[in-house]
Image 1 (tube, rainbow, N blue to C red):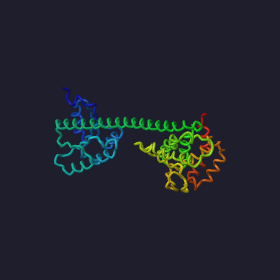
Image 2 (spheres, one colour; image 1 turned 60 degrees about the vertical axis):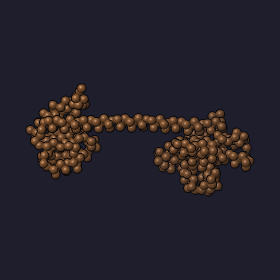
Image 3 (cartoon, helix red, strand yellow; image 1 turned 90 degrees about the horizontal axis):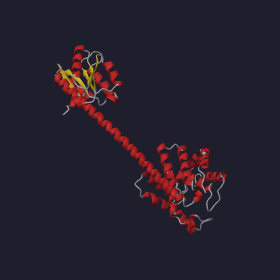
Image 4 (spheres, rainbow, N blue to C red; image 1 turned 60 degrees about the horizontal axis):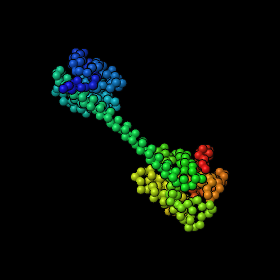
Amino acid sequence: MANEAQRMDPASIVVVDDDPIALGLMEEIISRIPGSSAITFSDPGEALGWCQVSTPDVIVSDYQMPEMDGLQLLGHLRAEHSLSNVPIMMVTSVGDREVRHRALALGATDFLGKPLDATEVTSRIKNMILVHQAQRGASARAHELAFQVSLATAALKEREREVILRLARAAEYRDWQSSAHTMRVAHFCRIIGGRLDLPDWEVERLFLAAPMHDVGKIGIPDRILLKPGRLDPDELKIMRSHTVIGQSILSESQSELLQYAAVIARSHHERIDGTGYPDGLKGDMIPLSSRIVAVADVFDAMTSKRPYQEAATVEAALTYIKGGAGTQLEAACVDAFMAALPQILETKTRFQDQG
């Protein structure tokens, strides 16, 4: 059976001592440990500089040194993030309790007592090497696990996004003349959210959820959804129920993104003055996400051909939107929309309806 020393990976041991005899003795002892090499320094400052660039497996430092003693060196070493887990052994007199207590407080791992005993030095250094290499192995495994988790999370989010887009597309197929409506609204919302200085994560969440705003139209009969001309009061009531249907479809999900989309689906037809539907919410009671979608949705709905209307001109839609600021639509969202109008129009051109 191979012994522990033979199983150890190559290890570097930094030794710091201003006494050349003690330094030579430590180097001789370490040379007998298989797979280990000593990097010796008589100047603590030079040792610190080397350790800041190269991370050793173990550091052994004498306490009594001029200019920078072992405790000062220990403090500097522990202040380096890359050295925070490297075992550091302090060489002190056996009875020097106060120094040992101070060294422990600064982060010393172990002690070697003077005069040095070769067997003790060998055993303690071997143990410290094994401890550090075990820590490095655990850290590497933890990083690999974190990487794998990040990949799995990214894949899950991508599948979640695909589900949302496919469900939105299913709703689009109910009305072939508005096949790109959901994507235009999503991009308009991203632009408006950016103009409102929302955090990037919030803008992205809005972009992913906005295509679901009309998913409830899946539950609206064709005779109403595709009816040319004006709806009668009963038909209008059924058409407006798409908000509640959309929330019902999305709200039972465990996905936070779908729950967020459920709120938009329900409240994107609310009005700032409280005369919207389905809940008659007013002002800030309406979620900001829904206030943003409302502006994007109104512009795209007005400028797109529908079974019940011809497409309005951009100028007419802009006049309507500006006129509705503060009553139907959130004024700040309208301002953001108008400020980004060149981007809005370029996006509308890029995502044309098919059919």
